[in-house]
Amino acid sequence: MPDISKAVFQAGHEIGNHSHTHPNFALKSASYIDSEFTRAQQAIIDAVGCAPAFLRAPYGVRWPGFHKMQHHLGLTGVMWSIIGLDWKLPAEAIAQRVLRRAKDGDIICLHDGRGTLKDPDVKSTLEAVRRIMPALLEKGYHFETVTQLLCPMK
Image (cartoon, rainbow, N blue to C red):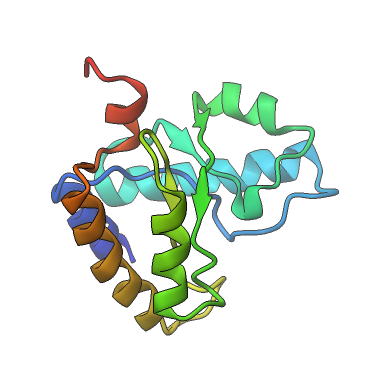
């Protein structure tokens, strides 16, 4: 996946840290949490040549130890405001869910994988994106990276 990460980054997309193995951090130790994000941070640096500034916790679960890890790695936590439930819904339902809720400044969470599956079927997500993006553009929305959204002067 390093080649894909590099291509995505070189195309102007932002890469964030989402942990090394995508665990649920509930009941995990601070050292485990730090290790997961430190390993991912290094893998991202190795793949794209720079460290990400943002993280999102798998499943949205933050646990004691997160603050210390974020400080250690210099990461800002970012969550979603709309989650597409694309791992379990068909494309039309995903698109309707996102389009019904979308408003200025939202962060939409969709997935290009399914947990740790080697070759996940993401056809429903891709089809939903094909429906969501033109509909939002037609309504006058535009798309930004997290940096552009949170730090508009950069």
